[in-house]
Image (cartoon, rainbow, N blue to C red; front, top):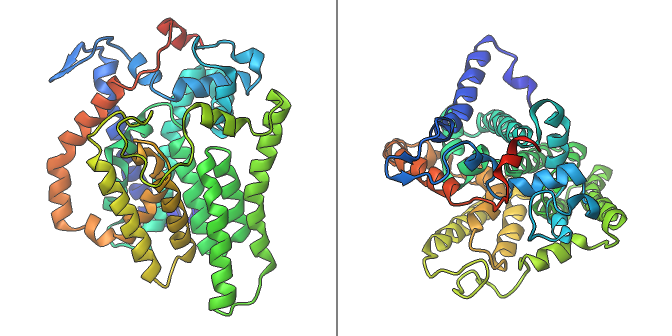
Length: 385
């Protein structure tokens, strides 16, 4: 997949454009913080400086994991005085491992930022290489993927594991559809080491396999069994949690303590829920509508059956999650959504709309970052950790 991007001379120019598409929006986001503005247009910056980027949720938590790797004694406390060590198994280790690798050179916080940005660039390379099979405008679609929706753009600019997670999950889904079952399973295993959401790849692969065998009358291939690596990797991770904390299900305990658990369908629309506290939730309805539309469209398609089953199972799961930030939970579906509806997202009408909307995307991103700050007692620690 990567090799195909380099096999022609003109591809290097294209890769340069992808790099610009990936990096320029991030630089634009950093400008008010690099220059320490106390006000940027109508946005007040109470504490000017780049710490606004470095201490955004949940980045500092991943720094704690990168330093302690779930050792309770190592997490008491590195950053937070009000967070129990039992909370950190909610943050999986792949992203912290990469942070730890580059920390000797960059420091922990800037290492985390470096890993996020590089993951986003590679994700765009991969998305472009796949998009070439679906659209005549892969660069345009990659640009859309970078800045829209703006919630995903936020995670490209702060310390966040989501670009790495989406990269691994997307590669897994693409590889599985290309009949590269071992690669699909390995990428899925890396995905589940970044976020538990990748665990939904396994039932999607199992369901698509059953469809091939029983509905499409394909022979049973031993390579299908590689999918078991995904839940096996999760079990090994839980074993490591047991080694460090004494609790095999430390992740579930952390999620329960964080009030994130499966409940009644559409429980997001409850003002009194811990993760809602608002009646202004109509945007969540539109996100569910998009996910259901994706699922229905993929159902009627004769291609990408694992994509359909993943969209079906994952959307059904999200309906039961009492979380206001469904946008962030739906990240793994974004590349599938853009590729499925590429004609709309590369149309003249959408281009005009996006150009007009770009300032709104930009100010949404800045506003979100300014008010998504983790309560670090001593901001001076940012450069020392």
